[in-house]
Amino acid sequence: MPEAPDQAGRPDLAAHIRPGDTVLWGQACAEPLTLTERLMEQRAAIGGLRCFVGVPASGTVRPEHADHVSFLSYCGSGGNRALHRAGVLDVLPGHYSTLPYLIESGALPVDVVLLQLSPADGAGRHSLGLAEEYLSAAIDRARVVIAEVNDQVPWTYGTRTLTAAELDLVVHTSRPPAELAAKRAGAAERRVAGHVAALIEDGATLQLGLGALPEAIAARLAGHRHLGVHSGLIGDAVADLMEAGVITNARKTLDRGRTVTGALMGTARLFGYAGGNPAIELRDTRYTHDPEVLAAQDRFVAINSAIEVDLTGQINAEVARGAYVGAVGGAVDFLRGAARSRGGLPIVALTSTVQAAGGGTASRIVAKLSGPVSTPRCDAGLIVTEHGVADLRGLPLGERVAAMLAISHPDHRPALEKECPL
Image (cartoon, rainbow, N blue to C red; front, side):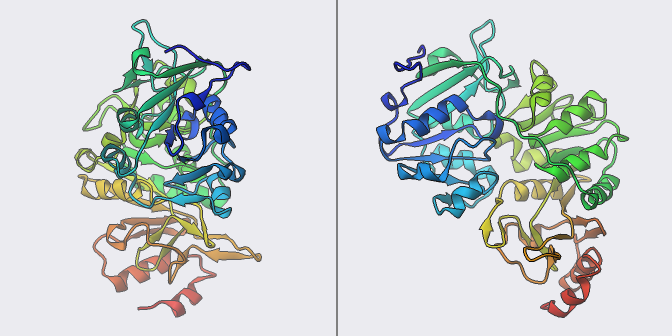
């Protein structure tokens, strides 16, 4: 269907979205900005609706929009923190791998999906551009599919394309996609990265999370050879390593020769490199997070982070200082996959301290978690800080405590020993 703008040249979403609908869109760099901005403008005209939002890379959604919109997310990242602080964001806790199945079954209802697509190729097929993830499940389930075809979105390879016949409304735009630039790593993060890089063998296949620490780890891999990538997301650093010949995917057990990911979360540098590049393939969450696929990938190294880890290996990746800032996410999916992989490494990396609210530092290795258990201690593998590596695999509780104390900050060890519940 062609674009159907209003008198000001903007699409009339109220003609397609009903009161009470749940609307879902691509997260982070895949957000269709023209459509989401218009949705917030028309929220009163539409009436009460619910929006499922992922990781934000823009400021489109704000607390004041809760006058006619309720918000739901799997995470408290970025701008979602402001929504949660204002009490207008509810959180769906659960493994990231379950999202497409919840959508598919209707347990997480999706009535309308908003997409950002690349221009069509010669056969009239639009690629999903910057993310596939759980969007395929939403497309198949939604009553209405609305697309923003953005001529600045790259054509990317994947398993799903769409034609005009599969879209209920098409809006043509030309604007830069939202970007997620990694923050600069500090000295402690660079030391953590050095320890992690030393664990990784040539020919390993990597999963990397989002943020300064994963980017710092990637930067320390420049001397490695024939690495592969199978990850829920990739950032600019993966493009750098592919271009440098470090990531070749030549020794992967599955998908040899291809970097497999659910989403591109970076800047124009990444988008440009991925455009028209068959060496990068976007896949559905049902593949990127599939436990059998992950376990079948030899030397699969899962690298995730955390807010805090207790002395027995319990991991909190959701709540910091009482605020919901993270997610259960895909950490458990990937850690379990790496644990079952031949030669795999399930790694959780973090700095040993964080700046405290009242000055000084607070330990991120703790005697008791201040938030929920996002990853149970039975799934903990290798915990890495700037002070070393605690390999908890096969260790009983008493030995775990000693290993965790050894990688805590020396200034906090005496207090941790006193507070230890064992």
